[in-house]
Structures are given as C-alpha cells and as structure tokens.
Length: 401
Figure 1 (tube, one colour):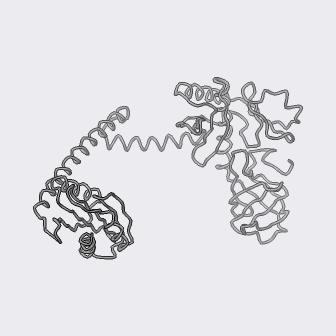
Figure 2 (cartoon, one colour):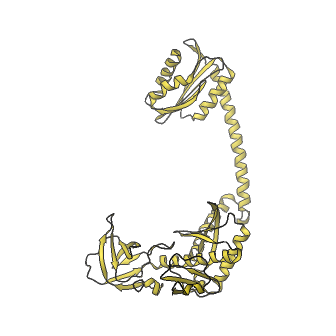
Figure 3 (tube, one colour):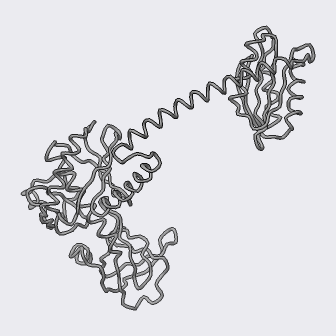
C-alpha cells in the first residue's frame, strides 16, 4: 500500500515520482505505471481521479492485475524524467464528499429502520443507493435524511484503519467484508463501521449536507437518488432557476406554482377535448362532401381522393365514416407525406371484396407494409409512384377481384 499515496493522505494534490513503464492496452490506449501515485483508480463504486502528469491529461485510472494504470491523452516522450503529478482537486474532493455522505445516509437508514444498502453508484451528477426494502415512505426518508445531516453537523471524525481479519471482528460492521486481507475500515465513531477502499474527508462536517431527491422501485428494491456537499448547492441553483422561470410563465408566486400549473394542465385538457371534437365535426363534414363525389368504376361505386400531408389516422376515420353512411361504396385514399405514401382503403358492408388480397398486390409497388381485414386496409411506403398512379394501380386490382 506504500505506493498508494491517496491512502496515506487523501488531501495530497501534487506529488513527484518516477515512471515504472509505459505501454498500450489491447485497444491501443497509452498508459503509464508509476512508482507511487496519488491518483485514485476506479473501485468500490467511486470513479477514478483525473488531473495531469507532466502537463499531460490523465483521462482514466484503473487498477488491473495489481498495477495502477494512468491512461494519458498522449504518450510521454522522455520516460527517464521525473514525473510531476497534479490531481483535479475539485473532482477528488467532490468524490470524497459524496462517498462519505453515502456511508452516513446508508448508516442512518440502518440505524433507524434496519434497512440495509445493497448497492451504491456515484455518478457525475447524483448518487444512488439501493435499499433492501420493497417500499419507502416520505416520513422514513425524511427521518433518515435528518439523522444523516445531524451526524454531519456534529462534525464527527472519519477515521481509517488497516486491520487483520481477526482484528476486524471487534467492530460492529454495517455489512460483510468482501476481502479477507488488507482490510481497510472507515469509521465514524459510535455510528458507522464499514469496510471501504474509497477516499473520504477527515470529518463528517466536510460532507456539508445531504439531500434526498427522489426514489423509485427497482427489482423489488428501492433506489434512492441523492446528493451531498457542493452538489446540494448545485441542485438548489438548478431547481431555483427552473422555479423562477415557471413562476414567470405561470404568473404565480413560488408557493402557488404547482397549483397554477395544475390549473393550466386542466385547461389544456379541456382545450384538447374541444379541439378533438371540432376536428371530428370537420371530418364528418368532409366525409359528407366526399359522399357527394361518388363515381362508378368497373361496376363499383368508388370514392378516391389524393391528400397532401394528411395523417393516416384522419384518413382511417374518414374512410370509416363514409362506409358507415354508404354500405355500397369502396373508398381509396392516398396521402403524400414528404417522400412517403400513406394509403387507406375501405368497403361498405354490402360490397363483396377482400381488400387484403388487394393490399398484398399493391404494397410491394411502394416497398410498403400494411395490414387490416377484408373490408379495411391501411399502410404506407416510399413515394415510388405518384399518388394518382398508385390509386390507378389499386383500382386495377379491385377490378380484377
């Protein structure tokens, strides 16, 4: 562990060392292995550190087969030179705050309600823990959050100890250990004892605060989303800006914003209903007009019509209205929408015709697909023919059958 400076002091931001070797991985990415390093590699739910080595950006840090690989934006030119490493401190301290905050919140759920944490993820914006419970109430969540923030406010020390398997038996661990040697215990006295390989601040006060954002059910567990430290302020800033914009749009004070939004949504639903009814009336009026434009083609009473940029649903509804009013008519509608053709054909109840057979013949003409039944088919495809030519082909097939 002597080569892992982040365990000796997680507050180290710069260090000098030597290159052990420089190689490329299987994907051709360059990395160096150092004699010692303050860069934390991905592990235990905590992401890797970033920063620079001799001014070259470190893009990822992974521990593979016992060596810590520092992946670089470009390879180093002189491997004999001393190496100056600089950690991206904002990223490192953020991870320290979040990881310690997760320990505290998980311990709070277990302390108050005996709810264990079964997994943890530290993302770039938020954290999540999966709780071993099928449900979570707001009351329970707030109580756990309140206790977690109380532990932060008390500014308790956060200690780390390297222990043997026998020594660790003296401590009331929150969860089973995943290793049997090189055991590293992270301790918040009289509150949390947890085996962990991550980086943490030296006291709970440095976590700043914890705020639960939301939770949802995931595979019979509850996934809790939360933030700690500086991320709480960031979330507050984002949400405050959104709230200010909403209050301006809704012309309502913050405390009345939800109520005003609900009224607006209800009004919108009413308008959508009125609009839908008006559109239905227009379609009925259009259907009546088209009923006056019937023509006899090959002994069949037909209504054909070409439309531009007409939704398929409207063609379907209009065709149904017409065939309900005239049981002897056959309807063929085609709409050109950009480089696509939409097609609907329907027949009245007294017409002896299987439109499915027609569809099988005409859809391939436009590389199209469709479906339906013997009296109603619909579909679409490429505009390989003009709408008029496609209707002509449909009428040819109808006459054949």
